Image (tube, rainbow, N blue to C red; front, top):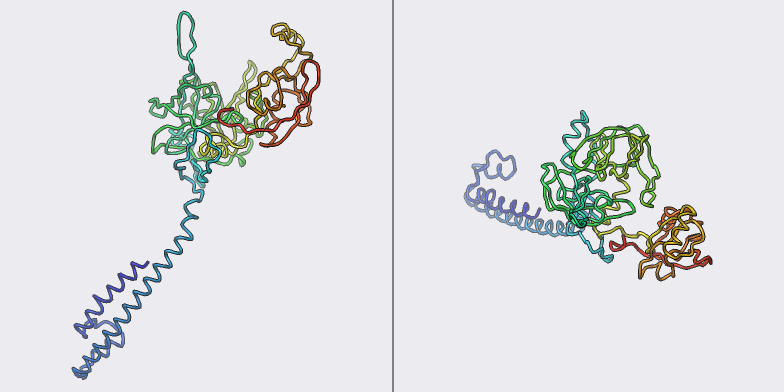
Length: 443
């Protein structure tokens, strides 16, 4: 703004002042009193000189006035910019990317960046057909091949591999998949639309929500925007894009939302998932569930198997994933996850109980939920838990199964003090634990 006033001042000095001081009869189309005064023929030369002198004084005053206004405007603009610019730079703007936020070490003292790496829904976007959605969104899905530790025998040695799917959520190469797809990975390869493998780095993962975030060093990638999974309805049509069987790259299946908030237990983790009848097969894990607006509303993660089971697949609601993504990108792990540091198993019948007693020289007395491993320097270790303790109750609630115990632990907060009752060599013991926080090294 101050430059505009400065330029106006120069313009008045050069164009207006110069013309009037050099030739008082210019600008004949001007309707001002100055023109009419200077256009009168009966004015004497002396009067003209006087008028020119007064004009010069008036223009000088005008120029000084404009310069003062421009300086004031510049100062005002600087103050206003100082007030409003910081607010604009920290807004959660859809489509913006997180800069310099990756921290694989999980440093808990790092300040979380408030700008998500993903983009929110494209409101008002409509498509004329499913094929149009697929054509526009398919390049934002990838195949994933994981190389694990080699399995070897006397006769041969071969690497162990597994496959899955992934979803690109930012133009600079952040990818979401399932934790179980990349678990135990030695190397991770991503297969984008051109089917040329790119090695990816693991930013972080969360076993509880079965989510992992990968990164490839690319710019300008197609990516999916995140929708609102709280607004989906049973009967709504959806699309699933993934990598079934590990080689049917970017396959499309179409179905409907069959159910919402389905509680499913996977690896002792109780999850609340979206149910669909769209075809889901091995390799689809980590793939995209899209609505008819082309928005990502779920991450495929499970299928029910069985000779008489068909058309039942599950996806993690995308609203449950958003906070996970924010934490993994900022800290390398999900903050606030309760942790005690044990592995849990279950003995379901007397025959199995007798077998364990015979094989390991134990004195187990009943079926139930058992501690099978206690990690050193953890809340469980410090609280006195031991291997083969049978857990009776946790925080005042009777333990019914390993998944139930895991659920009770997850209900706690970091730093909370709880009591756990166990049976050890036939005697009941009550122990006190302080809940810790799960970090990347304790997944």
